[in-house]
Length: 446
Image (cartoon, rainbow, N blue to C red; front, side, top):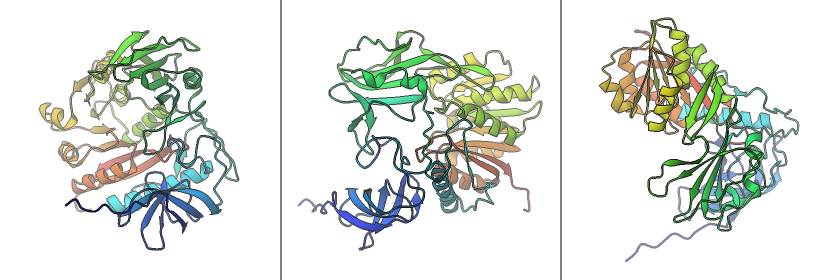
């Protein structure tokens, strides 16, 4: 006999008092029966009617949207984007929150993650409790201001069955067709992706490089789909994702874009990783270098190095007597890093996974380490590889506070503690943030 399926609660509405914010762009509430609700489109302290979007009776938790606000919080504003709201575009979590309120929510999340996963207070982590906005972002006053920074230099549009471009709804494959994304950078908006149809396409990624006029679209056809003739409002290179190999292939123009940051020009090919906020690379390099304080002659590691941003900054500071080793798993990024840093003779870039390549190098000591892992974090195994190197300082760049906190606990097991932590609001209107933690070895006997 098949086990009976618990009755679905999707569509059920509950009137609830909203509790604290949680990691992921929602807040926590409870039904009268005590079942946990993760509620989007609300704020701590509000009273709302929450409609269940996922879950069944007896589930550990339910997901829900606030469909009616009965008692609003002081930080609530009318969402400036008309595509935002319950059941609509899932890209922005905090369109209904003042800029200052958004940063307070992110600070609360980071505080909770540090305490729960790393056992650290903000003071113990060396953090002043603030989330720093990027210079130039429209940071409106908390009293009802709703400035929307146009920061996203890379936007991947989904395409519906009729060939219309849009963005995915929250936790859904359904497409919310849009005529403009408010957080898209002007260079992306100027491409006019939303203004035309894309028959037989699954996705269209639009890229507007910072510091150059390079523009690029990367097309992913549906199975068996044919590429359209692309005529956009300005010169643009066109790439496509192969149906069989999933690699990026050049169709027209350069197979890369040129980004400008930290006093250098960076080639980034195949739609490879680059920070999406135009101010992010410079802000993060400055934070990392201020925390590490490199010296002439230092031996430094740049792990998960991408196209070489931190390796380049380190190399210029450690000088001719120093050396930098970068490790990166994406082959095209390794090629770009080697190209970008070819004038720096004391830089070497190796291809492969950190946990596999680092032991092969036979490096047994390093003065400085930078690691900028993917959203999942570095993990205990990698941390255990790094600790014996005896670095006097380690810079950890994190885009996920939960992964950061977990890895800080692993570093604590190996004798490293954070001496400073900075958090940056490089993804306004969303729940995401970027952090830079600087770690140092714990003095023996401390």
